[in-house]
Amino acid sequence: MNPITRLVLRRALLAVPVLAVVSVAIFALAAASPFDPLAAYLGDRYLTMDPEDQARIAAQHGFDDPWPQRYLHWAGDLLTGDLGTSVALRQPVVDVLAERLPWTMLLVAVALVITMTTALVFGVWSAWRQGGWVDRVVTALSHVIEGIPTFVVALGAIAVFGVALSWLPVAGLTEAGAPVSFGQVSRHLLLPALVLGLSQAPVLLLHVRQSLLTALADDHVAGARARGLGEARVVLRHALPAALLPFTTLLGARAAEIATGAVLVEEVFSWPGAAQAVVRAAVAVDFPLLAALTLLSTIAVLVSSLLADVAYALLDPRVAVDA
Image 1 (cartoon, rainbow, N blue to C red):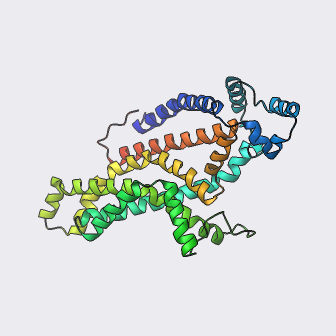
Image 2: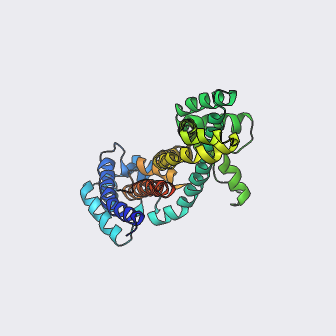
Image 3: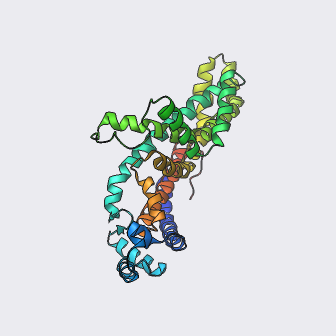
C-alpha cells in the first residue's frame, strides 16, 4: 500500500477516538457552565413565568437531565444522522450549519489567501533585502501585530476604516434591506477577511523570513552563486523551495488559530457564519449546536494537519511518512 494512503487511513482511524473524547468533553464542560439554558431559552419571559411552567419547559427540553444522559441521547441520534435541534436558534442544527457554514468557509478561505500571500511576499522580501528599511519595518510590525489580540485588531480596523474614514462597512453580510449579491458580500467581507488574515500572518511571515535566511546560507545556494546565476534566480529557484518545506507544516498547525480567530472576527463584525453561533450556543448552553460546531472545528484541524503532512511528504520524498 502507498505510504501516503497508509498515513491517511491511520489518521482517519485515530480521528474516531479523538472526536469521541472531544464530544464527551464538550458536554461535560457545558454542564459546568454558570449559564442557565432555561433562562436563555425563555429570554425576558424567564422573570415573569410561573415556576411550574418553567419546570414543565425544562423537563420538556431535558434542561435538568444529567449531562451523561443528554450525551447518550445525542450520540444515539447522531448515529442516525440527526444532529438535534438548537435551543438558542430554535431550528435544527443541520439547518443552522447549512445556512451559516458556507459564510464561515468563505471568510476563512479569503483570510487564508491573505495570510499566505502576505507571509510569502513580505517574508521573502525581508530575507532577500535583510537589514533594509522594508525588512526593519515588516519585522517590527510583525512582532507588534503578533502580540495584539485579534478582537483588538478588529476594533481598531472598525475605528479607522469604518468610522474615521468611512471606506468600508463594518457589520453584516449586506446593507440593511439589500439583497445578497456579489458586490454587497465582497464589500462587507473585505474588512473582516483582512483583519483575520493579517492577524494570522506575522508568525508565518517571520518563519518564512528565518527559513529563507537559513536556506540562503546553504552550500547549494553558495554553489549557485559561484556558477554566476542571477540573485533573483538563486533566491527563487534554489533557496525558496527549501525554505517553503517547513512552511506547509506550520500552515497546517495554524488552522486552530484561524478557527479561533474566525469566532472573534465574526462576532465583532456580525458576520452571519457558523463561528458566530459558537458564542450564542455557549451562552445558551446549547448542547447539540455546541457539539456540532466543536466537532466540525476539530475535524477541520485534523484534516488541515493531515494535508500539511501529505504536502510535506510529496514536496520532499526524503521525508519518512509516519502516523
